[in-house]
Length: 159
Image 1: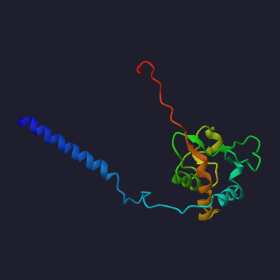
Image 2: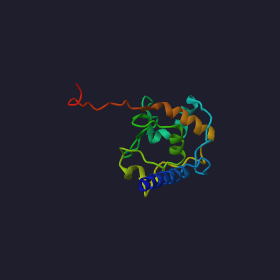
Image 3: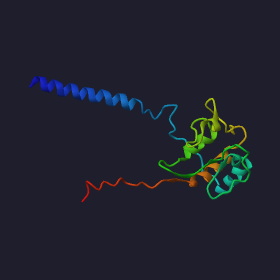
Image 4: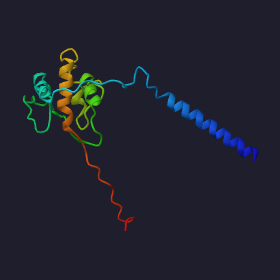
């Protein structure tokens, strides 16, 4: 009986120790935490104009909006928007614009979109204003949709 009580006490202590370790990695006051980061809502029409003015449409296109500049011979045009298994958040889009090497577009040959881990997309941080960034994200975000979930059909297990 004493052994079982000691095992239970050890299990509780081990669980508590693991819980403290896990929660210590979730520090909301960490300098790396995005908590509290929020930009104001932008203007969708101004974002559409910024998309063209900044030349985003030289390498990107958005469904239902024609690419305004022709793609050079041998270059690729990367689609923005569409359906995906995860919704693109405001923060995802801001990060993609201000740090294009953070994550590369899937479905495109890597040698055509990056060189040595650096995106071919120029960094616009010294070119665009914060207002243009906010407007651009406000314009782009509605073009991303969550793809519909299709449950697996298990005919052998269902009546």
